[in-house]
Length: 218
Image 1 (cartoon, rainbow, N blue to C red):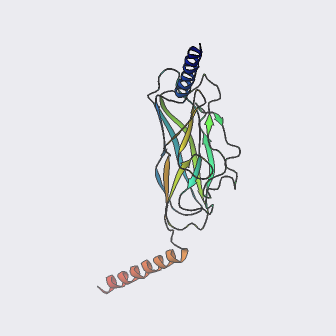
Image 2 (image 1 turned 180 degrees about the horizontal axis):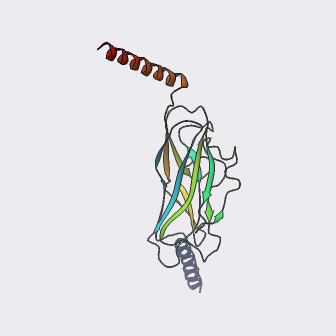
Image 3 (image 1 turned 180 degrees about the vertical axis):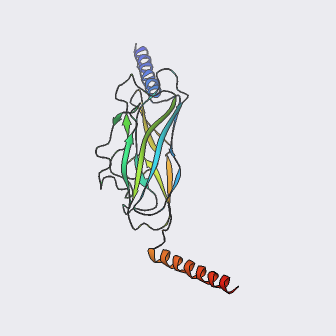
């Protein structure tokens, strides 16, 4: 009798463990990326727009994506000179915005990570889950404060507010998975000072005058 009870208990534990394994195993893949992956800003006090997309593939049955979460981290500067100026969520699939005032400063400052969740989920659960396909998630406009030195600066999606690179998504069972981050870079070019422009114009005028005098002499 004891052996039978032990065997039954072992079978129950095995079934429970199998259910946990099944619930936490997605049979497909999810990837995210920014477009463009790099952009050039002509000067500080300007802005650059990046589009975030998700590709879902290999899912079968009821497996699908119900939501996602991430923050943004500046990998090269932590002084808050980069910030999320605006953020436009694509409401065709993931239309339930997770963030509260995501573009209000200082919450939107990347110093180095913004302090507000930038994720979204489907509002109609479970009818509107995201199966295989490519989904445009949102457009993010990165603002640049004045005084940023010329150079290339790198950014990554993060799974938390401490800047851990990655990207989190949730399936139809509300299980959460972490995948590789989406990244992009911004190159800031140096804008000549007004005095430099005037000096160049003056030199051009001098050269033009000298050429004109040579033609008259000839």
